[in-house]
Image (cartoon, rainbow, N blue to C red; front, side, top):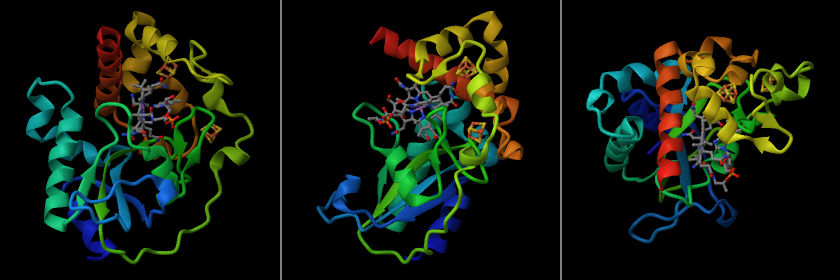
Length: 231
Ligand code: B12
Ligand code: SF4
Ligand code: SF4
């Protein structure tokens, strides 16, 4: 198995290869189901709107059942894992969540932004992870390139002043304040076009999600909050 084969197989399904690494015990990557340790972890996800056309054409998108993108990810990443001889792992589900944020930092040049979300030097804040493939074999990987964190040279940090309700503070992300605003009529801009603070970031503007994708994610965020409140 080589990394280019995995990248091509993922791309054929609408997923982008989001880097890979050779885990150590500190990475807390589970082994394969037959007991072998994971020697290579490959992350898959989306960069900008690249996954959207594949997902919007899938049966899960319009079937009306909960969590369509997660179910699509389980089906597609699960099928890739079967075909490539890997174990699929997912960032969603029930807590405790798999530490995808820490894995992402090992796999590609992403770093925490002042918003908490990971920023990529090319894709900005417009990217996410849909799953990972755990392989027993040690797959040869390109040497990690050194990239600068865009926030280190961002003089005005417009992301920190972009939120109309000040949900991003030095204390962290005020999820309740954000959700209240997005659910209210005054939050229609965030609901329809995506997080305004995220949109204020000048990095990777061409990767910004289109309105249909932005609305889908924001509606999913509100649905997750409602489900949390009911639990
Ligand atoms: C739980 C969770 C949430 C919770 C946050 C709970 C909280 N803060 O109290 C809720 C449902 C609110 C949430 C929302 C969003 N999330 Co979220 N979330 C997760 C999840 C599943 C687990 C995080 C966790 O608890 N890890 C375990 C703890 C121990 O590790 P931690 O690093 O300390 O985790 C903290 C942060 O990750 C933070 N967090 C999680 N999501 C977000 C989003 C923002 C904007 C910020 C500032 C912080 C934050 O909250 C965690 C607990 O304090 C991760 C996936 C994963 N497996 O990691 C995605 C993840 C972090 N979320 C992600 C995203 C994109 C979002 C949204 C922006 C989705 C959207 N709507 O587009 C929204 C934010 C809404 C907005 N303003 O736009 C991405 C981030 C990608 C990136 N570029 O960095 C991840 C990695 C999922 C993915 N599939 O890629 N999320
Ligand atoms: S606006 Fe500046 S500080 Fe904020 S995430 Fe973008 S590059 Fe980083
Ligand atoms: S979605 Fe809107 S209310 Fe929520 S953090 Fe982003 S800018 Fe603030």
